[in-house]
Image 1: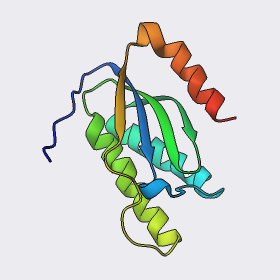
Image 2 (image 1 turned 30 degrees about the horizontal axis):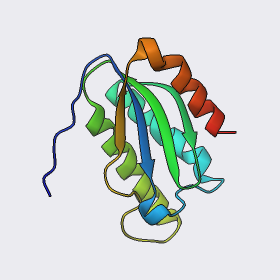
Image 3 (image 1 turned 60 degrees about the vertical axis):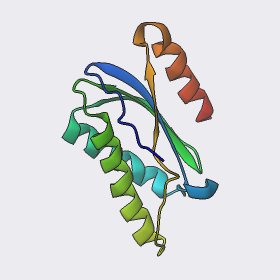
Image 4 (image 1 turned 120 degrees about the vertical axis):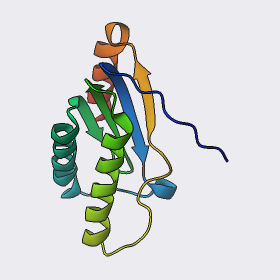
Length: 124
């Protein structure tokens, strides 16, 4: 199977989705407090802006803006860091996430408000 490079743009908006491997849960109550810490560290390190996020039991949604074109490195760092934390905490090994994350390029002028509402609504 051939891997394709992701399109990346500066000053772009993305809806990021990633799921637990085989549909497994990737968050418990304590993890819901820890994941945003990792997200904030990655945002600061890679200079991205987080507009909103939602943590479901077996996946997450993040709506971000990339002032610089460095999406893949940011999300890869987030997923690896959180996976190491999760595996140590739960005394498990192996992959936490199911394949590559999904990144949907969003037209901010048209979808900024509807996407933000959607992510907020699924959190309730």
